[in-house]
Image (tube, each protein chain N blue to C red):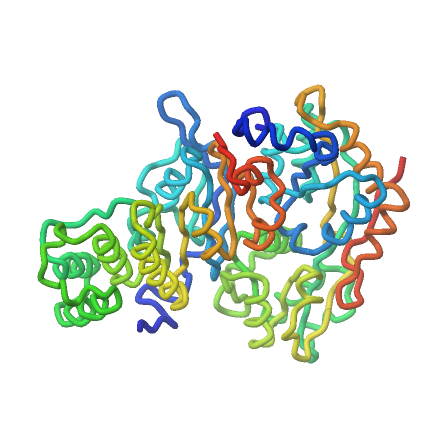
Length: 250
Length: 272
């Protein structure tokens, strides 16, 4: 297991809080993110929940700094999302993006890009492959793995570089329950070790299993932001009530 | 928007029979901190028992609550950001703003009281003394509402504490509980909201050093969303809720909410 009292990048949650003010993103004349205000504190597992098209994935990309907003402010403990902030973060996508090389080399490449020396890379790669249950596949071409194995590799690669914050975009939406469970266990362990988790999902069950707090997005706005027990027991907004009742929220 | 929420025809048909009773509810846009205080869990059943009106509270950040209300996603707005609330009314989104109640911040400190501020009711003078004596002060420094309130008070005191960052001024970059823990560990003064302090389990030998200055008050307002601007608003039910909150009965109920035997919210509606 990782030890994480202090990360390579300094104190625990040097990146928190995340403060988002009046965030707007427009594309093709449509306002896809419509004035979001949000503060995420350290030490919680946040789930960004909402129907398809509510702007969840887009919001995650904006706070990670992958795309610039139309207007508004994003600050990770006072710093804008940029290369320096991104080095302390890792993101895992719905469809894993793997390099055309071996399983072990995928992790080694990420470690090298983050400046780990050769000996550290070897030890860390081995450790992460064991944690992800992929050690027997270390020399296989990454792209020949099953969908679940590919996502475990993507997650192991993300965690290898000791991020302070892990951003997950629907990481299990194309996986079966067994593969989903293994991914969720890896994420839960990272959270226990102090990695700040922000998970985007439209899966209510996953949100219930995982969330300390829920940010419910609807039509590019935050319809509700509450501790998980409050959100699931007594949602106040119409959108969240309909969504949790299993109705089609458009 | 409510109209935009399309639900399956089947589900709609199933619930149609109960539509009358189920319509007797309002949506209140409020803040996470208000909801977390436990006040609303205490107040709302009293109102519902009296009127039969269910109150659904949406918790979001302050700015988001105001935006959501302006977007028609609520009947009543209950937040603590007076300037923004007045703007909301001026732009026609709200009918009228009423003062409702306040809670407050306090400065807690060690029994040795190195800055000699204990018992003070002048927060600005107290901060000046803390700076003059270089007594340790722990700040959340996390851009939160509490941190913003603290920085405003330093500004009034004519002091830039961040110039002493790492010296007597310690920036924790963390939440209220963590900052209290850290501050108490290093013998520092800490500005905290009273609700967190009352519920805080690790006070050690610390006590409240400064309280009672009006500049430490956090004023809440309540506003009915304007039906003329947003046609979905349940104006009658929302008005009933606003009227009750600012009535003697509602104000007494607010004063009756206690945590650990302490009153946390002080009603100050001016009445009709």
